[in-house]
Length: 201
Image (cartoon, rainbow, N blue to C red; front, side, top):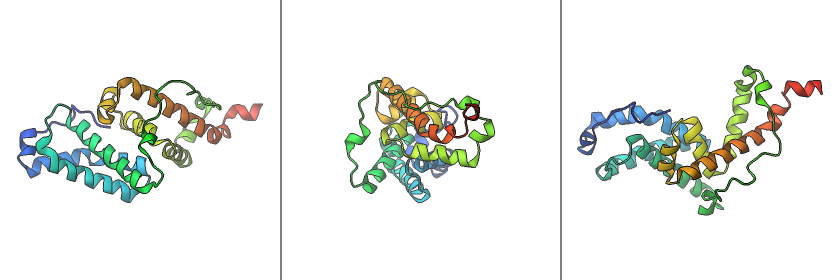
């Protein structure tokens, strides 16, 4: 969870090849970028590839970075592109259209809706519960998954997410709504079996 104001870096030092400043950059952003790769690709080695390629590309293109966006936004944009390129290489049937769903708010309500507030907290946070959530995230379409990870897992703002993915803020909000509703529907079968109300019916 990165706040662009949390870390201050000297762009002049980075562009000049200051190794200690670049090491600070790597130290500050390695964990969230690795987490992004792992959530997108569900494979530790692939996440490591995303991490390494992100910082390699950052190092190679520091001279071109003009500072019009925050360093964190710039790094997340590189990492997002790296993750998506790796997905495309792995999926023979992947096409760019998979990343460009129609951004309307029609038909976003799930068919099945479980009231999770009735579940005890330890049920939601159990290892089995976390695996179910991770699996549901994994099966989101790439376009929705990326928005959900950046906004709800990395806790970036709508504006930052839009800048990273080159989308309008309206499109980000629509995709985030779709992602949340899709996750809710996917998890309803799992949590529906654990809903205390079901035992009383």
